[in-house]
Length: 253
Image 1 (tube, one colour):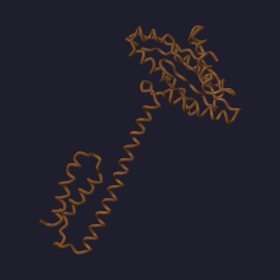
Image 2 (cartoon, helix red, strand yellow; image 1 turned 90 degrees about the vertical axis):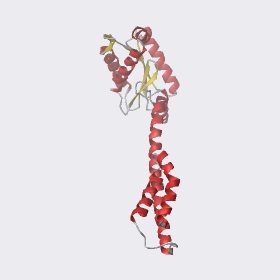
Image 3 (tube, helix red, strand yellow; image 1 turned 60 degrees about the vertical axis):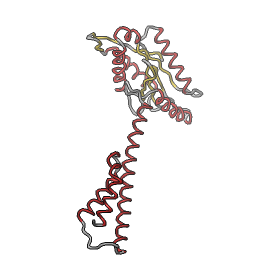
Image 4 (cartoon, rainbow, N blue to C red; image 1 turned 45 degrees about the vertical axis):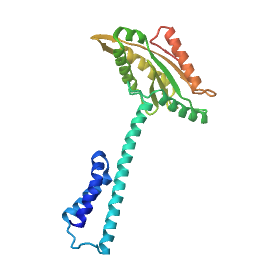
């Protein structure tokens, strides 16, 4: 048997199982194909022992193939890690039902904006708590599946107003939080909020072959000097409570 045939068969026996069970084992796959082509289609006119120059040539070839395999494997591994990282990032920062950012995501946004406004006392940001009115009754009457439909559709309405300067998240349950950064004036933000309130109240939700109307209550607040994220959130929550007490479907600022 030719020396290279023996070399190939010996190597193939050791690596065959690894190539079968590891789908993305590209370095082994490349080396496997390369050795096969060399031993199958190249007939070197010499027998044992090999001349020194051919030994050197094979060493260089093997080093090149190994280097190529390492590069390929590294790129594939890096790509897989990027995909996994994006998937974990999505699970950590976004609400799986509505696709909006979650509370963890919004806290990061709020903390960054607080730093900006603290460094520049003439700047401020605004935020608003939004709560779906009588949401428990919707769940009790139409079921939680239809309650989820309401949440997703209201999230879609809110998304129409999102921008690089206006951030939206599902704060928890039937509550949403909107934050306008320092590039949006407070009065402009309030106009957005009232437009949202009207959009929701005019939207028809089809639940169990019945057209249902929903409304939302909103409490807005503005970040002022000597405040922090927690205090401005508390102010917005207090204003939301007042909106609920005063009849719902309204904005309290």
